[in-house]
Length: 201
Image (cartoon, rainbow, N blue to C red; front, top):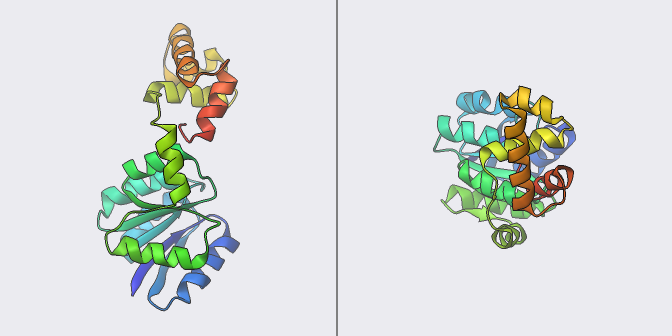
């Protein structure tokens, strides 16, 4: 039996996934959580073979949860299941120890197959998403540019970003200017929107 941890914040979706996977016969759902910050503790208690994580959860997102889980239980195979097919998410996930990245609208049989393939040591990535990630290239933003742009995306002023990130206002303006140039946007709002769509923030 393949022991699976299921992390999904929407109870109805989580229940449906658990029911569908349990029908497979060789898959057992050993624990379910609804928050990203519950993943590691639940995994340490249940010792799953595979963790199936949603990307957007309260507490912390699926990618952060995957990184923490990979550090604590490196033998656990981690799959991300998402409605957000953003290429930048795929790159971040793979850097966090994730071995599979699937879209939620895939057929349930495909999900069961992906779990089995992950168990056998394969990487499993939605082909459309893989192509988009390759054609989009890598994230051009540095960590600091990402943080500044993410704060700007939430509507923070230059002064607020400077205070929050312990930077001078001039430095914040410089980071925003460079980020806008790298993305090829006209202003910081457009830059933040593009970066968010690509999964770079």
